[in-house]
Image 1 (cartoon, helix red, strand yellow):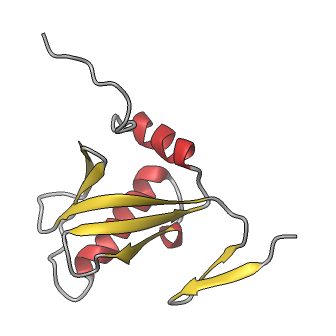
Image 2 (cartoon, one colour):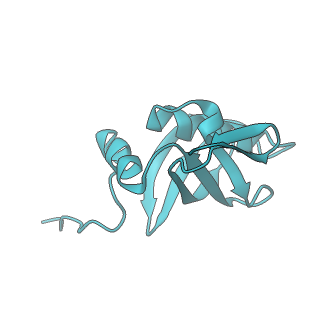
Length: 118
């Protein structure tokens, strides 16, 4: 029977709920907020917020949540809070669903074969 589990800083989730952790490369102080694509197995995320006092982390969480169509509380930085290299936990989606939703925005699965340019 699922219960409620505290996951820190006022966030809770139902136990047994799907989660995935994504490696992120954050680019703060960019001209716009967007998911820019894959660098190997790392998702590149551009945000307009500066890298100070957690502003870029909050913008990364919001940008990823918007790209995946989930609530802002379902995407949170769990590692790398003071580094451009971060780990973001996505709560409530399976790995396949995350890649499917990113592919709708043209991002896709980093492990999928890439088409060769002519």
